[in-house]
Image (cartoon, rainbow, N blue to C red; front, side, top):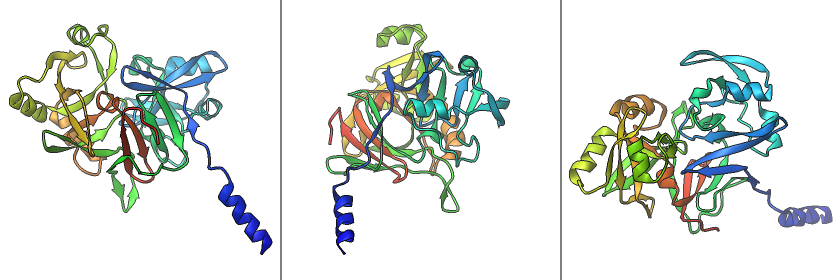
Length: 315
């Protein structure tokens, strides 16, 4: 009996498992995980919750001397895989989960042109299975052993596609509200626009820079513009396709209003026909760093929920 009491006391006073700080760089409303290497300069991966792959550039793979460890079919054809788990572990960065049916925790080796200002990307398969605490104001990223108490947070559900009751993919769907209209969106930390000279001048950057943005389908973009001609618009803002951007004064997430938020236009089929195949309900765009930058967000993938605090507040 005494042993059982002592065991219970030890369990009660034992410290909680610590959070894991992810070495990260916050740059123009996007987040890069920074992996130290034994071969000189670190490698930087864009963290992209709306992306489908975990990948590394051919140049970074060669510099790190990572040997091929299998291959996989991609949209561009057969591509090599490499295992970078040792590098990730050394940098205290979560290793992609092995029990995933396509990449099995490995990285696709892709042309450097796929990563204009990084050495690779870590997508939905990297975010899966963890509780992430991202504080844009303090520029910190952590992995938590469990979600924090919801006290003080605004909570909204994250929807995920399932197959026979099991989660099939890890593309989170959330709901935002603009002008009283609820709009389902992909949660996309990696949403990016490449600025044209006109957009760069308007936003105070250099032409060609990649910036965090959010996306919205053309039909909603046109609806906003018709109803609010005073909202600031930049024509031919994104060098990829020459799409315009619109500045929405306020976006509501849960009970929190954030803004202004820049949205970059995308054709309706990009989301209604393509991306919506991979979410649990149709999505009309993607909410990215141009909105999330105002918040501290906890992304509880196991619990399928998102906790929000305005600014850099802490529990």
